[in-house]
Image (cartoon, rainbow, N blue to C red; front, side):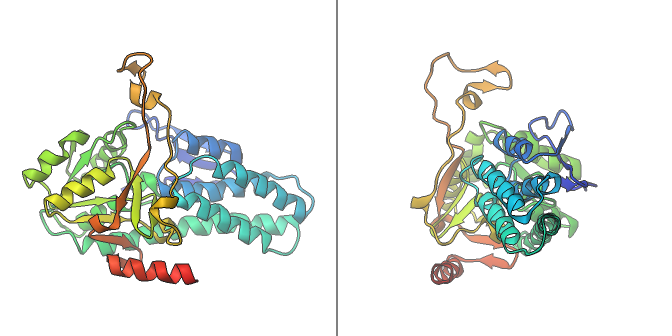
Length: 345
């Protein structure tokens, strides 16, 4: 298992792996300014909804830590300016907005001088990182109850330790089941166009000694029709009242799983829940055409071809067998009750 968290606060420096370099190079990014954090999020050097939420919190902590502001009011204005930069990086994952709002509320609600506000902001960011680890461990425990010995689990994109502070959501369940002695295996989709499954999920599972086979995205129907898997477990970037928003391709997996009567589970902490909104409110991030027309530095499509490159898609709740969060496994009915409470709360 890994010896360091995916992201670490080091007395005014934020350290994380540059995920665009994996699996070929383990390059540690060291950031001292919020703008560097924003750039790393936008360029997917850090990715995964839980991770970028905590990274955003730490980005605001960097602003406070290195600020020369003399007054509480000036410091809060600087934090608010950094918050605007962060929320413009990626529009879909709700954890980012949740984290920024939580830090802003804490800063604005703190009395005392600028030094006091700084201390509170840094401590809150560190608390959020610890909470993410704890939530993921609980997700692993709840999810592992759904996994049987000798099961083969299909997963999509990367919802492992690299997408969180540590342990992971979907892969956290795999890790916990494996630690319990269950002789399981994973089939990972490559996850075009950024290849998070091939580069990151396969890397994590190989590192941890968990059996993994890699397939291209268009092999999923074959794998399911041959009954080569027992369940699908994926992560989520936003869970709204009527749908799960996750990496592009998730919807296709869910429909195929439904057709083949294969359980389809979503693993995510409650910081990913956005139950006051529906799928109609979702903003789907559109990314650069080069991600599709190139693999690495090699162009694979003719010059001038039009490209559609949505980063996420929307899976209706009716296709989801259960949502595994830190408090347990939520059925559609339980999620509806939570959504009603959020709406009236």
